[in-house]
Image 1 (tube, rainbow, N blue to C red):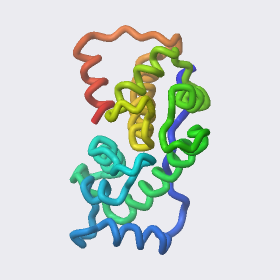
Image 2 (cartoon, one colour):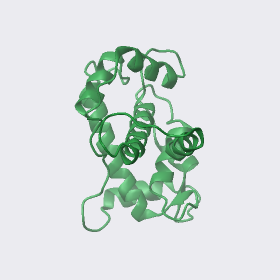
Image 3 (cartoon, rainbow, N blue to C red):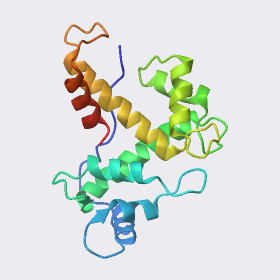
Image 4 (spheres, rainbow, N blue to C red):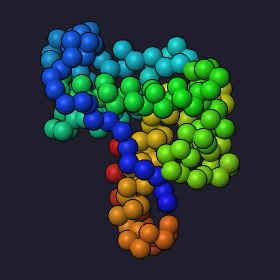
Length: 183
């Protein structure tokens, strides 16, 4: 009815040499931990710009079990696979290989994930995430939007016990859900 489960677990086994090398390269201060600034310095989107602070904070936060604002090599390994899975999805729907997803491509991607959104809502998503007014969504913004949609969907599902696609909640509960889903 409203989306499938998300992405993001690394294959079982040890840390690959490729991931170890990436981690060492990204860990600029050699602390054995990577924060969002270090991650940002290593990630570039299809427009040749670094990933946004929002995207990097979101991804670090998703894999930071201690909520310290940084991740170690094991969490980085999971994040590495997570990002690559999203890159695969992004590239699949960036049909013209422009490095940005346009409205029709975003609609197809979200539909494949199980979401049926109106054209107006798709346009709204592009406008909210298109910081340069290019009428496209970069890969980092695509990840942010998809993660937020998944989080809201999971929160919605817990309240929609009859699976009707509608819920009734109070204002404070709404704020609680919204603030928990966007951080």
